[in-house]
Length: 543
Image (cartoon, rainbow, N blue to C red; front, side):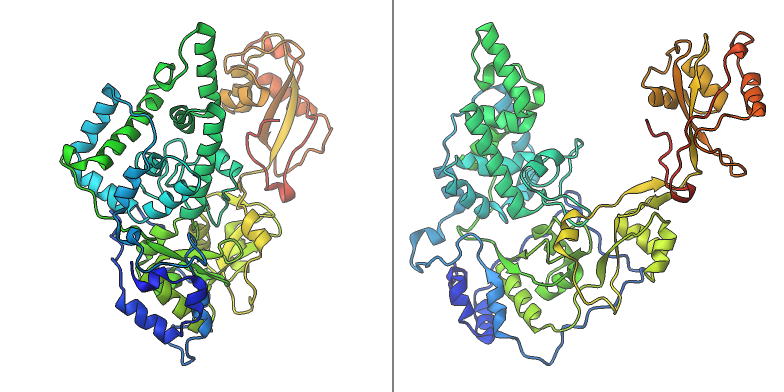
């Protein structure tokens, strides 16, 4: 560990910028390895052909670096701690520290051997996975030890995501710790159009360990807690209760659980075995130093992600490996008070940030005042519709509903950053750009079926079934109210509560599939539903 790495934030503030830069040059650490493209696709930068807002001023500024640059740096793991330069643990291998904290009872069954065989047959995959993990492992081990937890839990991202920080499962679990949306919200992981804290390295690690601690208190057994992390605590409780009723053991191996969960803890056991003795499996682990890989750098103004990477002197992809929670090409200071960067790059970023005096964000948030098309929203903000659609991920044939938040180019007249309230609550709500719809309430005849009503009004049977909460092959009871949504005629808007004209009644009777059905009462319009100016209506909406 270098001298700079051991300096407390208070000590760093006493360093002049030039001395700080000299120290950095003298104690350069390993450059973070490149992320495999097949396993970690970074967030795309703004399109090259886009017309962005004002370009931030260039880095070259005659103003000297301000002394406050060092104050932006912080070792979030051990702030203010006095560091012993001769401490023996500084040069220790972190893998040895992990091994020393193993506490879980070992499993030894066919599931474990299956997982061991899978990993040992893929040495390249294991190398990529452990190399990625080396960036974050020290931080996770520190957090695990603070909570007095078994160090095996620090290995859990190996089987959850292979340490791909922006991994997304088929069930929409996201991030290094694979949080589902609802569980993430339970642990205050913000998820909106600007950021997804399930991908945030610091926030997701803290939330995952808090969740695991809660599960351990619930079950009193780490294997059951891990099963609950994978399968859900309610399901594990039911499995335990079932065995209790049957007089069976309630340990992990005795429960009736899905194969995915049955394989979950054995996979962690296999990774534990590999970490404990990699040579047994003809595998090697990259050396991991027993000190933090990254620093936190405070930001106080909105800044483009591309400019932040430029300040740090690293690629956009590398920047996103440490800050994968960003959903947009701008970092909002009100919601993200710090970014993570490797030591050398963190100091370079802080120096550039302190020196820079021009604008840093070419994007801002705009709240849509009324429901409108993307083209109209683009015109109001002086940009192209194609750029607005791309940056906000708006599909074709959709309207932007009133109250939605859009990311738009930041004009020269905008001098304030996005507020904390908007940064935390921003949402994008869309509606189909479709003709206005009317809700018709009909009185069923003796032989009306879902299919018959659908044919009469030229809609799908599945829609009629959904609107009326019945099966697609259902038959309606005589006199039952039937709901149908149909396109309104632009020539005549039917007022709410008016009855259908006689001609329309006759037409409805004429379309009846059988003579018997033609005796059914004609449809009556009892309610007209349309959005503002007849546009903001969700088609096929259930009542």
